[in-house]
Length: 290
Image (cartoon, rainbow, N blue to C red; front, side, top):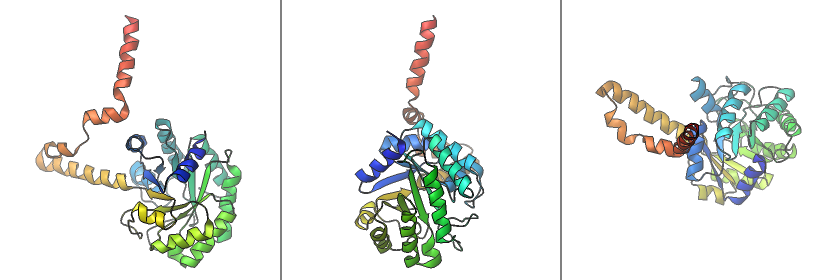
C-alpha cells in the first residue's frame, strides 16, 4: 500500500486524525511508539532546527526533502510535509512533488502566500491571486505519479481578506484538484464549520502554540468539521526549552546533576532506537567468525 493511501485511510478512520510534528527521525520514532498514526515535517522546523534560520522561505527543496527522507527511512508512519509555495513556478512545483514521492512522503501542503512568505501566524502576509494558486495546485496534481499521494492546499486568506474570501478560495482550490484543505490561522471554531460546508473534503486545523488560533481540544474541532489536527512544533518547542535549561544549569552549577531527573535515560533512548537488536546482531555475526 502506498504512503498516500495510508494517510488517506488514517484520515478516514480517525475522528479526527492527530498529526505530530517531528523535527527529525528520532522524534518520528517516539511519535510512532506512543501511537500517532501520522507525522509532520514543518518548513519552519527545518529552517529553525537545521539551519538556525527563521521561517522566511530561506531554505530549499533539497534541504526539506533530505530531512523528509531521513524520517521516512526510520518509520513507515505516513508523513505530511510542508512545501511552502513549492519553490518556484510550475516546473519547480512538479519537481518538488516528484522528489517528495521518491522520498516516501505521503502528503504535502502547498500554500497561497507569495514566494517571500512569512510564518502563517505573523502579520503583513501577502497572498497570490486565486488563479495563481489554482495553477500551483494543478501543477502539483499533474506531477504526482501515485494518484493517492495527497495534495493539500493551505490558505492564509483569513488574515488578509477575511473569512468569505478564505471560503471562496478553499472551494476554488478543491475545484483545481486539491484533495484536502489546510485552513491557516483561524480565530473562531465557527470558521471551520463554514469552510467544511463549502469544500466537503478533509479539513486540517493547525494547533500551533503562541499563534492566532486558540488551542482547541480535538473533540471540539471534530464537532466543527475538522478531520485532521496538526501539532507542528509542540515537541520542538518543549525540547528547546529543556535544552536551554540544561545549558544554563551547566554554566551556573558547574555540572548537569540538577537536570538529570528531567532527562531521557540511556535505557529509554535505547528502547526507542531498538539498540539491543543491533547489538545482538553484532554479537551473532562475531560469534560466527570464531
